[in-house]
Amino acid sequence: MAVTILVGCQWGDEGKGKIVDVLSSQMDVVARYQGGNNAGHTVVIHGDKYVLHILPSGILHDRVTSVIGNGVVIDPRALVEEINEVEGHGFGINGKLMISEQAHLILPQHAMLDRARELSLGEGKIGTTGKGIGSAYGEKMARRGLRVCDLRDSKKFTEKYRSLAFYCNEMLEKYYGQEPIDADSLLDELLDCAARIRPFIADTVTYLNDAVRAKKQILCEGAQGVLLDVDFGTYPFVTSSNPSPGGACTGLGISPRFIDNIMGVVKAYTTRVGSGPLPTELLDQVGEDLRKEGGEFGATTGRPRRCGWFDAPAVRRSLQVSGCTEITLTKLDVLSIFDEIPICTSYETSEGSTQLLPFDMEILKTAKPVYESMPGWKVPLSDVRDPKDLPKETVDYIKRIEKLLNTRITMASVGPDRRQTLCLD
Ligand code: GDP
Ligand code: IMO
Ligand code: MG
Image 1 (tube, rainbow, N blue to C red):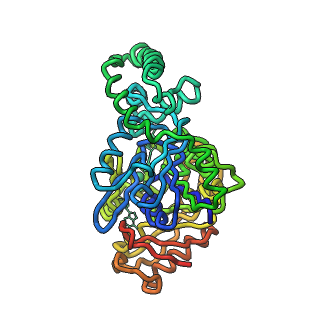
Image 2 (cartoon, rainbow, N blue to C red):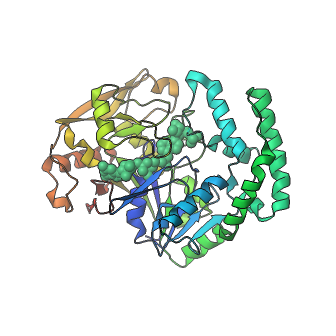
């Protein structure tokens, strides 16, 4: 498999970071294709935990080249902070990281605008990470954005930055009634960041296409999840990019013709951070238990994640859009505490019964999950290293999900560590 796209098939936090790290040992290149530092991808290596927000999760492997693609939005200050942190942990970056010259920049004003908009929405807020993602992608689409290539020339960067800052300040002040920010007070820091980033700036499109031609093993790492996709997710409670596989082609400049494999990462239950519909959400003690057992707190914002049972109509919609050739099922070990494990197989809605998550929020709001129940296994799974040692009830649970989704489950994850991964094929 030369080019593999890895996507989260729920509302993010499926365990993509862990699975990318596991697969990275067989990869030459790992490339992030969308999103920004709204992502929080956790990798655990021999008990040590690393959370990556903007750097690809392959960065912790010596022989992997990490690429930040053109479809990503980059906060220069956050990127430099993360590079320093990873280097501080003893991982080399030099010669291993390439940053697309076309990727757009998140500037300090974007985070301010993101937060001001959320404040103005009150109860109807999206519950963003506050990192400025939507504002930066907005500028990109409005063709006002600054790009990584603008970091090459300090003088030109300063001009463009000042002009965009003026526009953002007008919005902040006149539209949102907030204090403007003193753009020039941040300029020196941004220029320092530019100097630090400059050696990594590259034509990643040519690099990746040469790598494809040379039959290198390339893993395209999705952030967020398909149900947060701006086109296919629970709009408007989504992020501002395309985590679905199409986003990998546009976000890296690799033709769909060269994609060999699309791997979906699916959590054995459901979580979501921020606002928006979550049909199987458990607002009772069971939801609390799931959150506690799964450690379901945001890797970026620390917010408690909303938790619910496995939702087949939601994942089916993701798979329809993604065409995943296989699935990795994560966090099975978390379900060991339950006597019975309900699975949502379909919804009853105002428009009748459906097997697929509706796109129309007005209909989705009325969705009542229809459940069937599977017996729990009630034994810890975290020490299982051979699929033959999985309890029968766990195998039945995996098989049932596989059948409901009509897609092969080829890997299972029973803990956060690299070693807690089972190959089922
Ligand atoms: P990502 O955004 O998809 O990379 O996922 P996050 O890192 O935000 O959240 C997943 C969390 O679950 C992290 O804390 C991981 O260390 C952890 N994790 C991943 N796989 C497993 C698993 O199979 N079992 C358990 N218990 N934790 C896992
Ligand atoms: P990873 O890659 C879970 C959610 C936010 C909010 C919505 C929009 O770790 O899976 P944004 O800041 O993107 O404008 O917020 O999307 N969100 C995520 N939820 N995991 C993520 O990333 C997310 N990135 C954004 O909570 O609901
Ligand atoms: Mg995450």
